[in-house]
Each structure stands twice: as structure tokens, then as C-alpha cells.
Image (tube, rainbow over the protein chains, first blue to last red):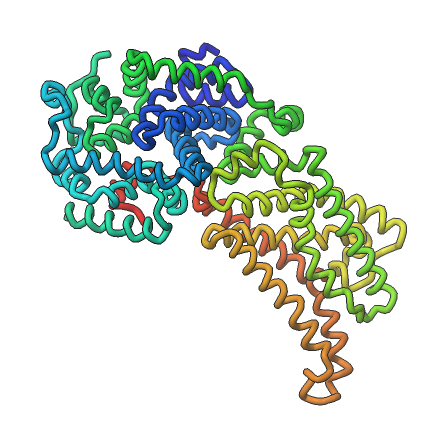
Length: 192
Length: 361
């Protein structure tokens, strides 16, 4: 098999049989996405690098259990997201710090989205950045408070369970549930 | 790469994908300069679009720091290849490739092949041996008690019944949960500990059935045919050998039921519910009917109460009960297969949730 020509699913199946070249190719295709996505969720780059490595090691070991449905990329990201939650859980002492960093990141984004304080983004770059979401949905997402948005990101975008999201965000499970409900209700109301 | 002009209203998940993120958008995403809504869209698109992932890879490759991080992790990951799974080697010999693929597809979501694989490891065979030994011993005891007196009044009979379904689960727990890389992986999923024990218990029982049949055949050839009442009518010639298997049947059915309930409840609660119901089914009739004071109707019932109480547990493996156990087992398996997604291994994508109006909590 030529790794460069095969699709992700074929590479994963070959990896399950212990083909290192196939998994190396799969890593090269998926690791950049996983790395950037992890960095958006964790400000500590040491943790990010550890999680990246653990996620791909786990994916290789579990390659035989992939059910063949959906995208390989989505499957690998699910593993990475769970590994990130594990990392937060392991570092229970630093959990609060990490959660604050996560919140802080989201808050900064929220601040810059709502207050017009975009000075740190070069205006030339701003011009070429084309929005993906427009209209009411974007407005609805942007209109959420940082807390609600963080919960929606963890549960909907990353597919984490309530318990996992609670670990990641450093809030009780009940809080995650109520925030998720409020966030969905707000988005729904904004789209109605 | 030539990226077509973005069309903001297009669905990122549609296939074939007419839309691709522009390099400028991906650069902004990499630098963390997109607003939340745009970043979410970019992530939802990247996960389903190989060409945009390739573009992102080229962008990331231009940043020295990121390139080094990726190369470092790559070296570490590839330097530790996983051990080739044992069941795969077994399967290649035992089954045709097509059949093996079909089995893998059906079982992959639940992780079932994993647990069967776990059973064939030498360290795990203790659990199987325990299940077979217990089933044979139980069968032998019931054989002797029921056969000798023909009125099963043994005080321990119902106690055996209470324990029987728990034996495989106990065997799994005893044989060392900590063994194997699978645990580490499995623990990354919800309810992992309980799921692991119950799935492995199920795998142990499945493996134990043929062995128990063999043990029963040996026992039957030594002790003669099973007493009437314990075996299905009309099959007394062969079913002496089936006696130990009959003791495994409740274990199989109850473990599967706990897993099926576990698609609605938290798994340890599901196991507790099944345990309590089992306790009531076996224990209460035996205890209540055994106690003389409970026969409030009068002493006339006393003589009939005790045989009924003891007979009750015998009924649980007697001829008419076996189809019921098989029905329970079949229903539980159907529920587990149909609702396997509820075990939470894979969640719907963002786009799927948006298009269905938000999904549920």
C-alpha cells in the first residue's frame, strides 16, 4: 500500500495491523488540526504537547476498534478531547489554574468580540478574514456569555459528556447542565 | 492550493464539499484570531475536509515552533508501536476475512472484540475456570440434592442461586482489572470501570459455556442421568450434560440485562437494580415461604409451603424457565445493539446537532 495515496480510513486499518508507515502518514495529516485545536482549549503548551502525543499513541493502540463510521479525523479528535480532560483531571492541583486559563481565553475572545477592542488584530489581516457564520446564528453564538459559550463548545463542538466538560471547565456537573440548557435556549430564541 | 471563494451559507458537512476555508481564514484560526462563531465553524469544517486539513498542515509547517512540536510528538508516538492484538492473530486463523470484518463491524462500537480478546489471555483464564468450576459444582450439588431426596429442601439451594450470577463478575474482578493497556484506553470513556467488568463478565460466560458443557458431559457420564424436574421434558438422555450450562444461563442473561439497562442508567445503578431484583426473585419467596409464622392461613399450608419454597429455585433452571432466560438474554442483546451509541463512545458532530435543532442535553 502506498501511504500517500490511501485515504484516512485505509491508513487507520493498516495502522491496526501495526503498519508504522501508514500511521506516520495519518499523523502527518491529522496532527496539525489536533494541535491547533488543542491550543485553542489549553493555554499550557507543555500539556498540549503531552496530550497530542498521548492522543495519537492511544489512537494507534485503539485503531482496531474504530467502527468504520464517520471521519477518522473526528474519531481522533474525540480521543484527543478526552485525553485533554484526563490531563486536567490528573493535574487536580492545577485544575483551577487551567480552568481559569481556559475561561480567560474565552473571556478575552468575548471581550474582543463585543467591546470592539480589536486593536491587537492587524487591520489588514482583519480585512481578509472572511466570516464563516453570518446572520442570526453568528449573532446568537457571539451573544452568549463566555461561560455559556465555553459549555456549548465543550459539550456540542467537542462532544464531551457533562462530567468531562465539568472537569475541563472546573465547575460542578450541575452547573454544566444548567448552562448548556440556558445556552441552547438562548441560541434557539435568537434563531426563532 | 486553489481555494474557491467562500460561500458563507453553504453547509460544511455536505458532500461532495463545494466549500473550502480560505488560507487567510486558516491562518487567522491558527493564530487564534477568529471570533468564537468563526472558529467553531472552522473546526467543524476541518474535521470533515481532508483538503482543508492539508492546507492547515502547510500553514502550520511554516511556523518553526509548531513544526518542532509536531516532529517531536511524531517521533515519540512512532517509537512506541502497539503490540499486535492476540485475537486478531487468532481470528485470522479461525475465520474468513469477510466474516471477521462483519464481526468487527458489529462489535466495534461496543468494544466487544476487545473483551473477548481479553478473555483468551492466560491471566484471564482464571475467571473462565472459576465460572466453569462454580457451574459444575452448583450442578453437582443440585444434582445430588434434588436427585437423592426428590424433594429439594436443602437450605443452601437458594443461596447458591443468589450467588450463581455473581460468580463470573467476581471472577473478572479477582483476575486483575489492572492488567493490560486496554484499561488505560477504556478509562477515557464514561462509566468505564463498570462497563469493563460487565463486558468482561459477559465474555467470560460466553467462553465458559462450551467448557461447562464438556464438564457436564463428564459429570453426567460419571453420575448418571439428571433427575427429572431439572431438565427439559423429553431430553433427559442428553441434558445431564447441560446441567452446568443451565447454571450459567442466569449469569449470562443478568449480566446482559445490566448492560442493557446501562444504556439508560448509570451503569453501576443498572447493575444494582438487576442485583436487587434478582435478590427479590430468589430470596423473598424462599424466605417468606420457609418461615412457619408467615403461613398465616394456617398449619394446613405448612406442609405444602416448604416444598414450594425450595421448588421455586429449582423452577428457575427447570425446563420451562430456560426459554424465559433465553428470551431475557435475547432482549438484552437487542437493546444493547440498538442503543450501543448511548454508551457514549462517539457523539454526534456539531453540524448534525445544529441541523436537528440543537439536540438534547
